[in-house]
Length: 126
Image (cartoon, rainbow, N blue to C red; front, side, top):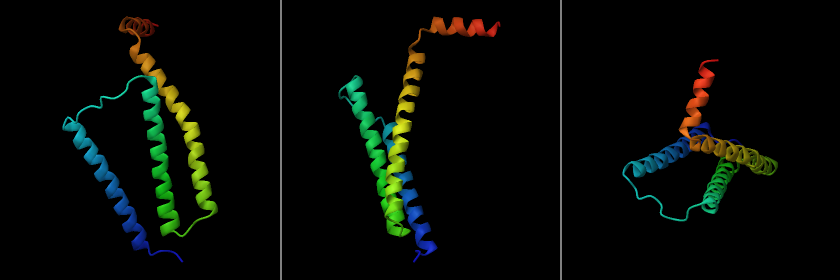
């Protein structure tokens, strides 16, 4: 038995509004000058923070999968297993690519300005 369309739409709307409210609160706190974190620094702290973000995002995805597809749509079993393993596989592919792109951007940002200007000038006159 499928849930009524009105229930599905209302649950989707409530989820969307909760997400937007959370993002708005975060933006407001950032603009209000919330004190910066004064914790550990360096590569281990960065890796811990990235791991926490990735695992937290995956856990949120699991909650959405279970809540919507099992709770509302009545799907379960194989569908839920495929959703969990597929999202884990996506993380396994996306995380190294994100790390590589971040490293390249940081490397480019730290390059001395004189080298960037020389390369830009050289390319402009070719």
